[in-house]
Length: 498
Image 1 (spheres, one colour):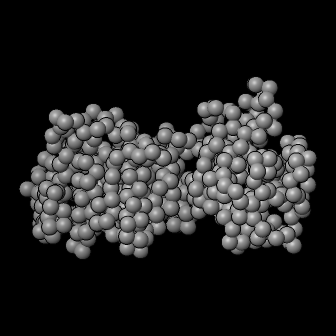
Image 2 (cartoon, rainbow, N blue to C red):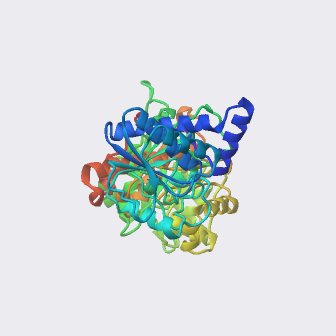
Image 3 (cartoon, rainbow, N blue to C red):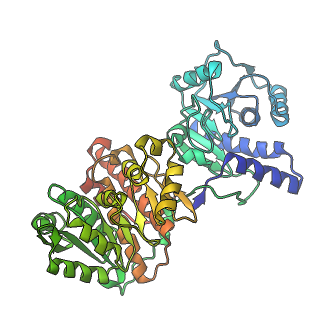
């Protein structure tokens, strides 16, 4: 697992390390410049790089990189936005002059077409106000230049803490960040602004400041224990999914098939009796529990059958396409008392928002922004404007682990916070959330074989498995053509290098 860092945390970390070891900031800047040059060598081994340098230390990194690129035989050109102001930036500006790097002032008449790549070293992680005026116009020119853009530490105009675009922001093809990924690079608009991210070390080792957001990488799938050769169905757990209603059988089947494909030993699917033939056809690997209704209540036999299934379950998930039949209240209350963790999703969350049931500490809820708004009694716009606050409020209000879906899914178990950095717009279709619910139920089942995975880790790995499956399906079928079936078929728990 990796952690992001805030702008304040990064500044404090650098300052404390330099003070403790008597190392000047210029040396850290030199190491940062080496990372930029290494990225340029991968991008344009013998091309021309135009370095756009601002007045602060971000510009200082750019000056240092321009000098190193020039000294190593690359063609460098520096365009300076104002005078260098910080001590280390001033020093590297002078070193560029001494090294005879071509330099000029950056203004409206400056051409951005002479280089093979533009290096954005205008604004750093300390930006806390909107980018306006001539600088905003410059950023628009950079984005419209048609040239590949390499951002230094963070794209100019992007908040290092929230990932919000502060008025205008550079849309980089790649970003070389230093020591640790900044929180804003994986939040909000960060992923679209940053492009491919490379983390380059700058002497201060593995030290970390306060933990902001934890994120998983494909290699972390090694945390899921391998399936022992002596394993059997019971070894890998029993999942009970309560899902489906007339017209929404696909949601139940998607959750069940995803649960099976993620490795659950036995997957039981409790659904309304009339759905069983359809669901059994769509999810033949699931064991159906027919729920019969007498009037507005669950039949005695169905109640007993559901209780028996829940009594031996290692995980339960409820809500995918469940609908709102009055008998659903009984089903919800029976599930709420299950002797295993419950994943609350979709229609079950709407019931929960009405006060029908409450989750327990060991449970998970997986709302999208609309469901979150209902649970908190606010607007969807409020949730989308500040998903971090919504995540915290959900946990404080309901007391269970929360996975808040979105462009960047956020998670908390009350002790730590995590963000998922994988996924694709191809997954923005009905049914994708049902697949995630099945994945989470299957991962919870792995505790049956002795895995000690905590709730935050399970949510992280589940969201990553889901997102990576979406990326694979989109690569195979195109972003417009990913279906639930293709998403499920692309589920793969094998760890890979990052």
